[in-house]
Amino acid sequence: MFSIDLGSGAEMVLRDRSTDFAVHRLINANLDHLREWEPWAHGDQSMISISSFGTYLLTQWVKGEAIPCVIRQDGEVAGATTARINLYEKSATIGYWLGEAYEGRGLVTRAVSALLDVLFNEYDIARAIIDTSVMNKRSRAVAERLGFTHEGTMRGAQAYPGERRDLVVYGLLREEWLGRSADSGA
Image 1 (cartoon, rainbow, N blue to C red):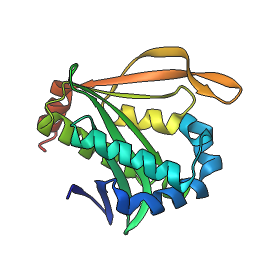
Image 2 (cartoon, rainbow, N blue to C red; image 1 turned 90 degrees about the horizontal axis):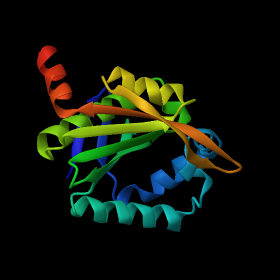
Image 3 (cartoon, one colour; image 1 turned 135 degrees about the horizontal axis):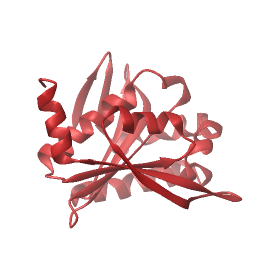
Image 4 (cartoon, one colour; image 1 turned 45 degrees about the horizontal axis):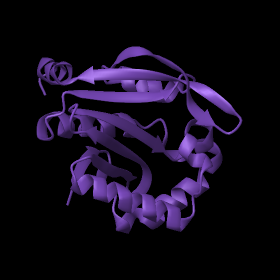
């Protein structure tokens, strides 16, 4: 089973059927918070919808086109991170979210760091991408903390109910990540 220790009682594990109920509960308990930053949170968040999406992600994982994970803190689901992989371009787009009570602990930074190690070392990905709302300072800080380069802004690229928002794009090359790890002695 896919599992990575993130330290301090946190771990990242494969999002599978056994996590569906906890993901559903966390999303629905945090809908107002998630809807501020996540366009997907405005859609159907029923148990059937979340379970179906989880099954879709597992199918993508089997095909080598995604790494869907949940982040757990002390055994409780705290959020999720997923890498969607483009096999032809050898690139991956990383997304993440946390329940509001789990923010400010470095969970996403540690989870994305671990995911980058897997992508660059085991999947031979050449480039990782994080895109987020221009206004999402916490999400942007994760990308910047991990050494991603701000590559540009896509105007009106995110659809929210009644509005479109600008999307900021960050990129990180394999050699940048591996060089950073070597420089730090990791």
